Structures are given as C-alpha cells and as structure tokens.
Length: 569
Ligand code: TPU
Ligand code: MG
Image (cartoon, rainbow, N blue to C red):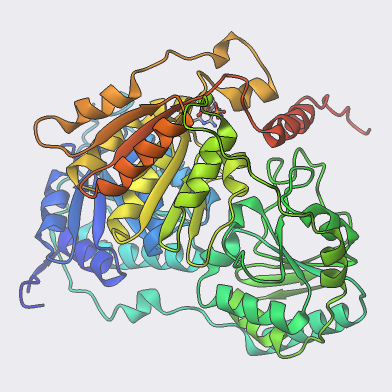
C-alpha cells in the first residue's frame, strides 16, 4: 500500500475505489478528454490497463469481464467514445451486470464560456451525454467540482453493485488531476444489503404454505440467479433437493443448475426445449420462478409463457399469487425456504416417464463434408470441466443450448440484449479474468464481422481462446425470421485475417475446415496452441441450420407481425 498516493486527486480516488471493489483490469480507449485520468488509473499498482480497438468492443469486453469478475470498468472519451460504449452498457443493463462506464468530458470552464468543442454535437450544452446515460444505467453522475467526486463516485459504484446494473461517472478533463479528499472504508460502498427479517420470514412461510397446497411443483431457473450472487446458486440446489421436484432452466441460465443433477430436466424454451422440459413445465400446478426473464425470445414469441400464476423470486423481492415481499435477498430466501418445504417428487416421477431416450449421435467419416451436427458432436467431446462456452446470437444459440455441460463447465449467452458480435470482445474480457479456463466461442460469420478487431487483443495478451466460426454465408437467423437480400454478406478469408492480426509477433492460428477430418485436426491445433487464439472457420451449407432455429424463427416472426391493436379493442 506504500505506493498509494498520500495526496489524492479525483483520478487517484477513482482508481483506488476500482481496485478496492476487486477490479484488476480496466478497459480503455484513450482520447484527449480522458488522458490525465488514464495516467492516474495507470499509476495504481493494482490495476492493469487494457486497450481496446474501439469503444463498442471496449464496452463489450468490460461486459464479459463483469461476467467473470462480478464488476468491471470501461473508460472512454466524450461522445465519440461514450456513445459507442453505450451499446455494451445497454447489454450490461439488460444482462444485470455492474459495469462502471467512465467518460472524460470537456473542461469545466467551457460550458459557461459558450465554447464550441470537438467531439460534441456542435452546441454549447454539454449535458446531453449525462442525460442519455441516465436512461441506460442505474445511477449516472457528472462531477462538476473536485470536492464532490468522493461522494458521487462512491454513490454510483454502490448503486451499481447493489442493483447489479451499470453506472456512469463523468469526469471533466481538468478535474482528473485536481485534489480531493482520501477515501473512507470501502465497506461503506460494498457492504451488501441484507433481507428485512420480517419480510424474509413471511415470504418463506407464504411460499411453503402455497407449495404445500399444490400437487405438481416445478422450479424454473432464470439468468438472474447467478447475477444475484450471495450464495444463491448453492442455496437453489439445497432448496431443489429439499423439494425433490423437477428443475427446468431457461436458455440464458444454462449451467446455473448442474446439468448432471438428477433433478435437472432440461432447458425450458417452449417448443424448442431440450429433453422434456416443456412438457413438465406445462404439467406443473405451481411454478417457482427463480430469477427468470420472460421475453419474446425466451418464450418463443410468447407461445411458451406459462399459463399458471407464477411465484417469482427475484434478486431483492418475491411476488407470489396474492402477496408481495420487498427487501428479500434471493440467496437468503432460497436458503430459508429450503428449511420449510415438504418433499414432493411427483414432477420427477412424471418426468422420468416422459424423458426422451438419449439420441444416438452419428460420427462422420473424416472425408465427409462438414455439417452443423458434426461440429456440435466434436465440440461436445472438447468440452470439459474447465470449459467456458460463449454462444453468439444466431444458430449458435440453438446449437449451444443442446450441449451437455459436465460439472464445472460454464456457459455464457447474451440473450436479453442480443448484440451480434458480443461474443468476441466479451470472451476476450472474460479470459483476462479467468486465464485458467478453456474458452470456446461459437460465433456465426455475420456476428464475427461486427467485432472481429478484438481478436487482435486476444493475440496481444496471448490468450488461447478457441473461436469456432460457423460460416454459412450470411445471417441465417434473420432468414428464418424474415428473409431478404439484406441477409447476404460479403464472404471473408477468416483464417488469413487472423494471420494479419498476428503482425510480426503474434501466436494466433487461423484454420479452415470443410470436412469432419479437417475439423478434428484443427481442434488438435487449437488444443496445442497455448500462446494465442485459434480461429477455425467451419464451412457448412447455407441451409444447414437447426430445426429449433427454424421453429423459433417462425413464432418470433409471427409475434413481430401482430397487427396494431385498435384503441379499446
Ligand atoms: O447462425 P447465423 O448465420 O444466424 O449467425 P450470423 O452469421 O452471425 O448472423 C447473425 C445475423 C443477425 C442479425 C443481423 N442476428 N441478429 N441480427 C440483428 C442484429 C443487428 N445488429 C446488432 C448489433 N445485433 C443484432 N442482433
Ligand atoms: Mg451466418
């Protein structure tokens, strides 16, 4: 700690807070409004600066880092940087991740002097960025005087950590180096809120009583379970075992309940569910929804919305048919309920009758043309307890949810925001925090083209990420929702592109596979390449897409096409 400053500036204060909340890497793109701030962050020995190719990628890399680390920081310049970084910030909002977006801003004298400035809209009102940030963060602050910085920085960070949402901190270029007071104890920022004891007790009693009056209870797990932290995932396993009932998982929560657990009944995704998850969810007479998110995508165009009253256990409250309880933390609620419920395994008995037999997977001969199914078969064999699988928007979602995750394997998906190109920078950010994990990205050709530059950061940081690029020559997911010439894209030489990113000193490998044997060989190369990313372009037929994507696409298209409701109808 001796190298920490004795006199604090606003930049030092922010740096110390970021380090104290467990951030080890901060993602940046420099610009003249944030350069002094970047120097201050660099000076903190506990922070490593990670430069990104552009601000969209920077924000998505921070989004991925927040998945791995629980919280992240993205530092950009005014407007030209921040407006691009708003996209990854929106993702963090939708995906419930505390990403701290920090933007440099004009000198504090400029607004009152009515100066026109570069990187702005060409008007003299510079408040627009803060106003925009308010809509996509849980707390947005602009520091106007150095003495306000400690209070505003602490407030924004605390809000983000508690709400599991992004926050925004704007720092004028002439304040990063201005003196301010030293920080107080970090516990004031990080201490969790605990449940209201009476509300917790009442919620657990109410839930236990409701469940005891039902014959066929099922638990449905959603993506906010992991975001809740505070031991909620472990508590859910205890509750499930105390209840003995079937546990289905939403696609965005895949892996949040162990897939080798005997009560796991598959991914509930309406008509494109795995195993018999949809049959058992629709058979239930009580559905305990834990951190669930129901959107048009997760409900297959609203066709899979459960039609019984839902018991919703959220990150900080629970709502049941007939009752609501505020300030009840999810982990505490699940633990408490586990001690009060009665064992009732009727849905497991029924599920074991419905459960489909394991599918026999055909192994292609080495010379066979590569297919989607063969890619999945080979990737399945490659997944182990150290794997984190990133699946991108597109058919990769549908192929991804079909995998059987062994214990320890993790799964990342961005289904709420659904930004094509997310997986490349997000996997990069995630890998910096978890260099020990075997990271595999499944991404389509269209998505890859959005954020391809960030592969060069994987090269720069020697990260052995395996990118399985499925080249079906276009936007197939869009074809299934609504086709047109706009779904065709320019083909690239993806393997060569990766070599270009190597420059003179990189260790990336780019390969292309057209047959089953070529993919097998390429995966071996990826396994042996421990010093950089390996991209394997898998060429498949344009029409080789999953049955699930086609089915889902039809229902989503129908939901999109609903005619406007007339007033009063
Ligand atoms: O498997 P496949 O071919 O569907 O995947 P690929 O090639 O990655 O194509 C994805 C096509 C796609 C688009 C264009 N999926 N969603 N969109 C809409 C979209 C547009 N812009 C952003 C930033 N995100 C989107 N999801
Ligand atoms: Mg494609």
